[in-house]
Picture 1 (cartoon, rainbow, N blue to C red):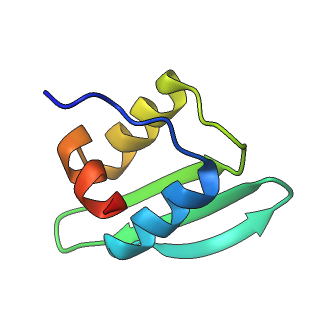
Picture 2 (cartoon, rainbow, N blue to C red):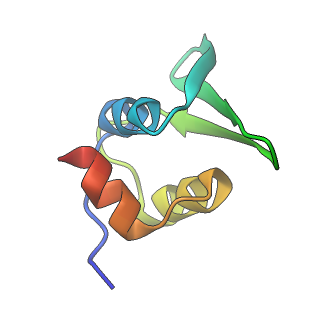
Length: 76
């Protein structure tokens, strides 16, 4: 299993947009993203912090249905 990268909230939003997520709203320092598929609707909130905590990043990945490998590919 690849190691989880340390990234900012802004970089994560860009990566999730590459994966098909759409920005639903932006309020303060948090961005709400959503992706609608045939089976399911994925929703998540990304804090625009300078560095995301590992637990926060893992929770966002779980909510979006992505894994660590998918995230690393999206960041390239």
